Image 1 (cartoon, helix red, strand yellow):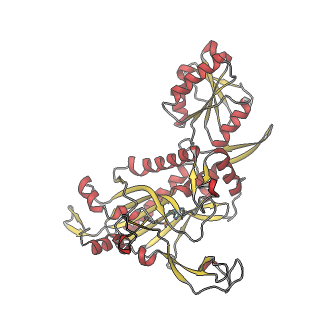
Image 2 (tube, rainbow, N blue to C red; image 1 turned 180 degrees about the vertical axis):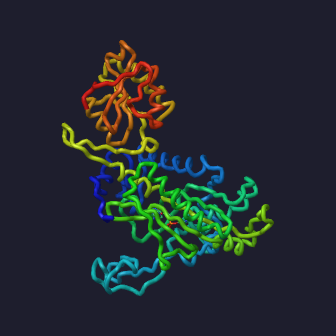
Length: 456
Ligand code: GAP
């Protein structure tokens, strides 16, 4: 398989589209920006919400063996001693004695500073957790950390969830939330940042069944990306070698995506064994053992952890959806996002700004907004407006014209094919519901017909 992405997209095009259309802005831009921090704009926030909803639906709502959790970002400092993050979550760094820039040891070749050729210090370990203080006193005793992963909030709540849900093994706990890492090397837009969001599952199983569940989750999670539209050839699995394995992992496989800069991790699936529950039991003095009523055994469950990044998923979905095709005016840019992920589901476009048309269009707009995120646009030619919606991935445009006033019919135009159908306004909501659920455009509602109307 080639390591070069073949598509029409590159990172510059996506960064520019994201800024121009309000998906993603640089954080604190008016102050010159803050390194590797990004803000999600009006469309980005919808895309991210749709990704998280799709994940929650697949992993919690549609399963009987999963429940959700939303643990605090700030946790007892002992958590990070038990988890191994205080000791092990660090990168060896060298500093240039001239320009004082810091580099990860594994990133430099040779003996001198890659930036100014200055002399480098000996490597020092640099912990990636952000420190802060609890309460008003900036005292060593009050040091706490911003969580570098959401997982630990799940482990420390294992007994709480077990006791309150009466779940039996195998079962999982899912959580979506922010995580923070003072990464040395950031970049590639939202690929590696210091503040990001994770979607993590901790799936508790009986020891001995762990390999089977590990393989199950790899396939399940891979299919999730494919179902949401990522091309299979742009995804691959990569197993970690012994040296790469995190301190807690018995085995780990990454789901990687072919980003413009090469293959990069989207999600890691790890077999964490009993490491976490054993550690937290030892440091807290609380039993985290499971009693299996069927066999009468007591044991510490093993944990399978599929851990995905919301921001990296958003980047992969945007890159994979981006398409360009020639048209009359040059190039049509289309974001072929999956229907479930598209930030705006429907655009309402009156053909002109005549009052009678606007009145009908606004009524339709108000009605559709009860169901979906809908945009209203009456500026410039209809062709331009279709293009604007194509570029942000809106699956359907509804056009209201002068005939609509007479026969109460409107047009639906489909993003991907640019084909159109004409239908009674009374059928509009139910038809859009069906189309957004995946029904082909050719399936016509009562009173509907194919349409060769407004030029693109
Ligand atoms: N609990 C296990 C864990 O945190 P990880 O591989 O370090 O494992 C899981 O992180 C996922 O979180 C990654 O696959 C990636 O999608 C996302 N992620 C990790 N560090 C990130 C960063 N600095 N910026 C953006 N996403 C990140």
